[in-house]
Length: 366
Image (cartoon, rainbow, N blue to C red; front, side):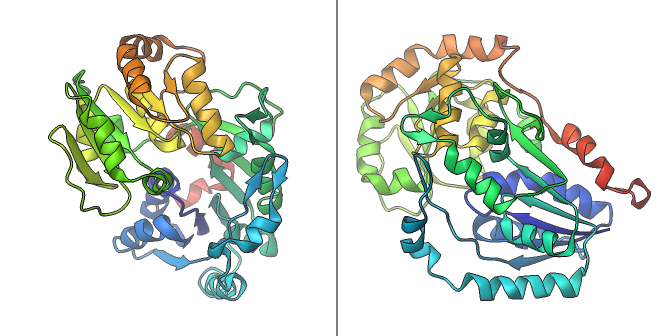
């Protein structure tokens, strides 16, 4: 079976979600060409070294800036990241796909549109697997804190107008359904599923995004945590830093293997409201202090956390917010543990695999 597989490279979430799917397909003998960029390019170039039937091709995807009433094309045109020769480079990727796969049996995309365009050109079945497609279902709160779902929906319509199957991974049950999108629980890393929790009330993980890291000096974050002397703060940053943290603050790079060990022992997580880490935290029963950036998806994730008592949502982090989060940890933990209606606290791999079966020939062993 010949499969073209496109994976968004923004952050770790897309790559980690697709890793178990791609691994299963590769082990079943499918021929896979991966279109990737950014973080996904790094991850799958490494993965491809273990499989002779997996190849990786870099692609280039422009960023479509959003605004309250949809997409901001004028701002998108001026973004430095959008000044690359996208079309010429992507033509080389399509040529690679034509040479390696020709007409693919299946195209899979996690929010990566270059592979989708190839699927349309060859009239090949396209399956999208992401977290954004759930907004095609609609939501009772289309606007949150000045952020709208309109730009998310417009991106999906513009980049992925047609799909044989749309799968949306989610750590919570959407509150509306118009049909046309299959909802499944988030895909969780094996290490998360097997993690044995032994939480300490004085241990906390802080996961800083590149936006937070650049918005204010790291020293300000350090001082805030240093003042909470009765706790140990494990701060994960996206870039190398030469800061000298106080005794109760420990700094790590994103991707440090200590992360899972600290998830096992932490009482809470302070983070932006990205889908991947929040999914892991809810699965493990860890309360979250969510600091969403100005994207509707993050605002919605944080809204779900706060509305249902699984943690706290704040626009800015300060001592008062930290004190409240720590004081209410037992209540948050209890609410996560006892919830039966909102959270999808299980791994979604088998449900996703079952949904894909009509497009995976069983005779081929996949």
